[in-house]
Amino acid sequence: MAVCNLPMRSGCLHFFVTAAIATFACPMDADAGPSDGWLSVYSCANGKLVQSRVDGNDSSNASRLLRAGHAVWTNGRLDENIIDAMAEGRGIWSAAPLTTLARITGAPIPAEILTAIALKETGLNGRFWPWSIHWSGRSYRLPSRQQAVAAAKYLLAQGITNFDVSVMQVNWRWHSGKFASIQAAFDPVANIQVAGQILNEHFLATGNWRSAIARYHSRTPALHQPYLADVLGHLRRIQTSTVEPPEKHLC
Image (cartoon, rainbow, N blue to C red; front, side, top):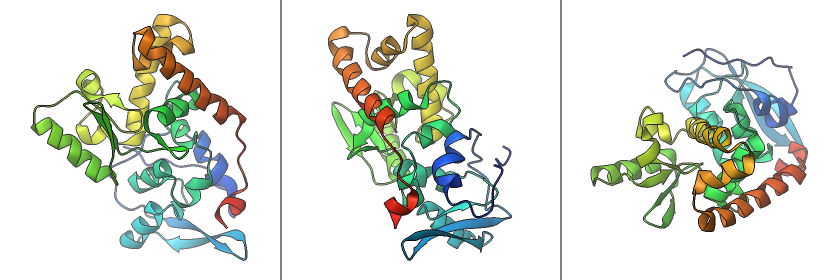
């Protein structure tokens, strides 16, 4: 898969945090190694968010900075470390709009709707959590992508397929064919893209987003009406929220 690039303006501290990544949609190269380039590293100095440039060819240091949400590739590349930091709201991503992750997926669904559903499905303290599994009436939040995948593999080894995975809680029994593997199901980008496909199918069948959202959860009114009400509540909060300057949030 091709490396994804964004146009960059040198020294623009808000570019990745609140604008560029939030409007960029490009497939992630999950198998690629470190980029032959530089990192833009963000830190605080005297209450201000400052940007510095670090050689990205030191793979261990690059991975650490990217995973912590303290850096991005200067050439705009999105890798697994950035996606995971973004999904967890680490570092600079804690100051980005909640809709950022949904926007980069390119899913044909309004990012606000996808984010509202994510908050309903895996929300905790105002954020969604991508390493989540729902099985047998209980929700489990695992600490990392790797541990979530391991837990899902354990369920599959026991012959259990009826469980929901990752940020959008896509049901594995009914939708596993939409993923390349159980590992791919815990890629937040892929998970949101599949959820977008499911929602779009419901929208085409019903002709409106409210019904599509309700059917995403269940076709039974007694079950889907409370769900829809909760999602619409999250949607209203997203639509009325304001994004503070990163310096105010981080420094």
